[in-house]
Length: 150
View (tube, one colour):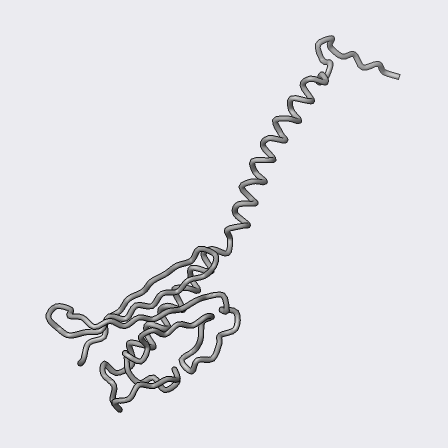
């Protein structure tokens, strides 16, 4: 049997070196886990913001596609009967809804309000439509558009 001869300075790690390396690895691992936790916790924020933009754009488009003034001269009380921009003034929905007023599944946590105000834009009479969409997870978005009588 052959005998292996080792140099005298090849002795391995001491207990102190092992403890120090364990502490360093623990601190580094803690930092990595904190970053991962923060990333996972906030991973839905962009989706909520994107949904809020889509909701606001759809409401704004719906309002702006209607007539500038009331064609039949009466105020409508049901959203499915709205026929002019002013009918939407003061609209407030808890949960996003379609143009018929039916709730959209999965978007119940959003709150949508619509305000219509008269004004003048470059010397032309117009109506400013402001749509505000909010969500309990710190999402608050406002979109505005103008409707003129053309």
